[in-house]
Length: 349
Image 1 (tube, rainbow, N blue to C red):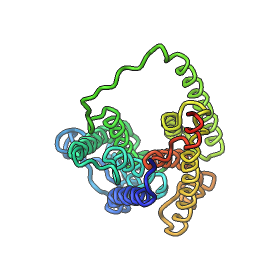
Image 2 (cartoon, helix red, strand yellow):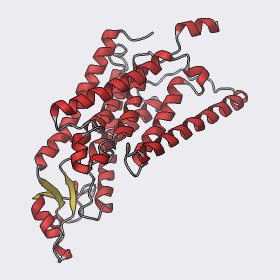
Image 3 (spheres, rainbow, N blue to C red):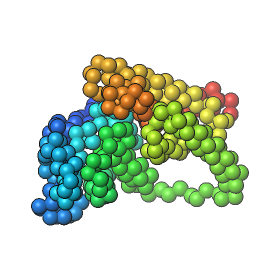
C-alpha cells in the first residue's frame, strides 16, 4: 500500500532537515579553520587522538605562514597539512555533499525505524539500538580512514583536494549508509522466530543467466556513460569516485525494479519518481547556488569555474546525477511507490 502524500512529504522534510543539520556540523569546522590550515603537530608525538593513533594531533596555522615555510629551501622544517577549509563542508559542491547524508538519513528513518507510518513500539528499542551501533561503527571506521589519509598524503600541498568526492563529509556519510544497509540486511532490528524455507536451487539457472546478462549490459552502459562524461569534463578526471557511485546505482536499480526490462516497464511510477525527482533536484541546486553565491551545485558552477577554470565548471554533474538517482529511487521504495502498477498485477491474474 503506497504511503499517503502527507507522510511522504513528512519523511522527505525530516530527512532533508537532518541532512542540512549534519552538513552544518562540517561547515562549522570549516568556519573554525577560516583562512588557516590544520597542520600535524609533531611536538605531541605520533599517536594522536586520545592515544588511539586514529587521528594525528593537529593545530591551526595561517596559510601564508605554512606556505612560506613549505616553499623555502630548507625542507626539514616543512609543515604537514592535514586539512583546510572546504575539506569538510564542501561548499563548492554543496549539492553533491548534501546528497550523501540525504540518502543516509532516508535509509535510517524509512527502512530501519519505519518512519513515519510503520514505527512499531515493540521493535523501536532494538531499532534505535541498531542505529546507535551503526553510528559508532561509522565513526570508528571513518577515524581509521582519516588516519590513513593523513599517512598517505605526504605531499604537504596536496591534502584532501577541494573538489567533489574527496570531502570528509562524504566519507562519513558513506560509511553510515554502508553500515545501515549491512545491519538492515542482517535483520538485526527485527528478528523473527519464523524462518523461511530455503529456495529451490533447481529454479536458479535460467533466472541467474538473465540476471547476469542484464547486469552486465547495465554495467557496460554506465561504463560507456562515465567515459563520455569524463571526456566531456562532466565528471572528476580520475573517474574512480564517479564510477563507483554509478556501479552502486546499477546494483540498487536491479534490486528495486527487477533484473530485466520486462519488470522495469511495469514499474513506471517508481521510474518516474527517480528521473523527475533527479531533474528537479538539479534545477533546485542550480538556483540555490545562484541565490546563495557560496553553496555550489557541482555543475554549471561559477564557484568551480573560478577555482578550477571554466572548463571544469561541470565536473560534479556525473556525481550529482548518480547520487540523486539513488536517493529518489530509494525514496520511491520508502513511500512504497516502486512496485508494479495495479493493472499489470491484475492482468497477471
